[in-house]
Image 1 (cartoon, rainbow, N blue to C red):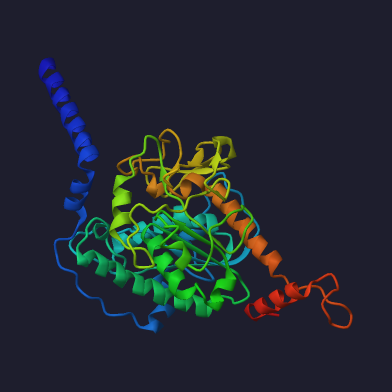
Image 2: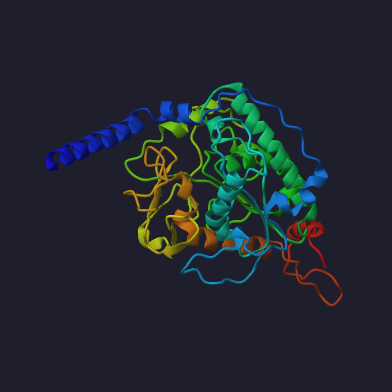
Length: 402
């Protein structure tokens, strides 16, 4: 009996090792088999603009609601003063259904997962006076694993919802507040296009304190110039773009690079081989490196992903020459690490407290730069102000109240 038990254990070990080896060497093929829908894409009717008046279409919105996941605080995180900003957050893919290309907004499982993602990814921005996070008919995970036209059409349909939700946000958010844009993974892909169409060359660009385009590569040549804002160069700079993608070492980013090459840049050109943006979330600077002690709090989730605690000094970060953010040996974050030591799911939780501090600095910098200049008793701007500064301040004033 003991010998049979040992044989069974040995067989189980062989099966597990074989499965891991298969995932390691055929991750792309296995993922396509498991997640790419076999059905054809079915066109979606546009949502009526008035649909976004329905609170059910928002995970989070101005005014909030009890249990708002984006306002959640992990253990070890202290309350901070309200951040005078309006945040627009686009959640990542939370649907893995292979029977259709787009998930309905009332898909209960996808909606629950989206709320979990908001808890971990949007909560560093939760001190904002307004935080808006729409539900949308997201493309399912398989859309990113194929070069079939169905996948592209699914992404375009999802983006149409995001754009409509953003237009609702822009019309209803407090116009006195600067805007912080946040998107992760699929949300980041949509955010890039949204910036091209609603920020670049538009008056709205003046209100953007920062754009966090995380978990999707931003080509320096084919994407960033189309987005209307430059890459961030300082930790206290406002009006700029941050982006990073987290891998432990040894890193194998081949699946990400495949998707990067498959989809064209915002300029319509092939992005294959072009360098992409890496802003270190610990330092807030491009191409930078930081030791673990500088990481003031990693959000380590529990097994349910419903709770978690901050752990300082857990993870270092450095921007590698290939543009990926490397975090050293694999940290223990949970079971959702993707093949190749890809910590995609944890891009923001790995640096939760640093991201929270980063957005505070950038919003404060925006507020300081666009505060009304002092005036004399005659109502003229103070003598210390230069004519150029006066014109700059007036150009921003229509966005402010009072």
